[in-house]
Length: 381
Ligand code: PMP
Ligand code: GLN
Image (cartoon, rainbow, N blue to C red; front, side):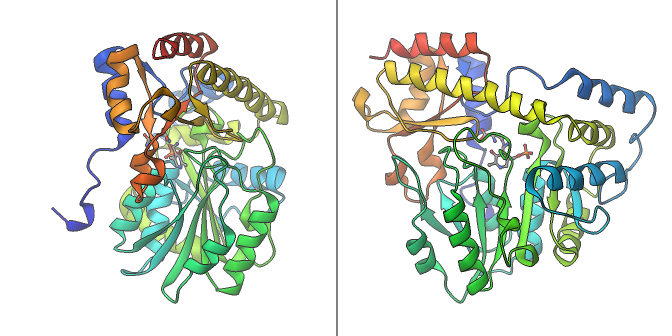
């Protein structure tokens, strides 16, 4: 086995979802909604399939309708203008976008600074590129990045910053001041920045500030997002990258030899989804906000310390008040103990100590499912 794969194994999400299936527990582990996205968007996919649009290899960079819709979406929500032909690339979800970007931009031995806890595909993507990850630990209770500590981690070998806001698993959302400080550092030290913005529409407190919109950032930022979270179609795996032509061309080269092209019919449907009115996007946000509030309150009543989540699908808790010392053991035993699955934050850390008693719960579930989960968790006390 290639030593770069050491320690990667099976993702925690697949393991926890399998555990939920085996035990019949409520799955608040892996982040996926338990109801599907808009009917009109599903209809658009069916129409594309039926009419034979996208059933054969679509164009490598993505179908023109989708690239155009992505460019319009970035302008409408972020005020950033992209040329759909040379500055937009469609990928198989944000996961492929991340892997293709890291493989395209990193040389072996390059250092990548990323927030820890990390989303798990970052460690894998960095390892597959033969690069070195350098964590900037986000600490409870508010998980704010320490910008001075970030600055101190930049060395001559630092090639890029890999940023995720809204942040999975903590729910931290970068403030405008933090985003500006990071952008200034990137310009000063001439770093590339890769931003994972899959939760861009799920900000409940504060605002989403795309790094690329800040001074000096356009030339050096690769922005990544996907349809999974924004339209509740995590199984469709339609994602995208926006960046200046030279960076897009590099990522297109790696994408070309990972998947060649992304599945066709869903691209037509996502093009329609991206053009939904503003009310769709704010409606989704308000629905998820209510679910965040419901689950956070329930977990608090059940005895957890609940760290505020300003965005994403997730809330991070601390299990110490329940007399628990280890999140991994707790999550492995939880399905048997009370029929709920959650994810230990420790697996997203190099420094396992920092997240040892932190456990992530997903709130992207129907209200009745969340209340049943809370009922069950109350039995722990
Ligand atoms: N980045 C983050 C932070 C995520 O939580 C996820 C999971 N949706 C992804 C990337 C992967 O997104 P996709 O399903 O579009 O590959
Ligand atoms: N993003 C989802 C999560 O954090 C999982 C996606 C996956 O399983 N790769 O739970």
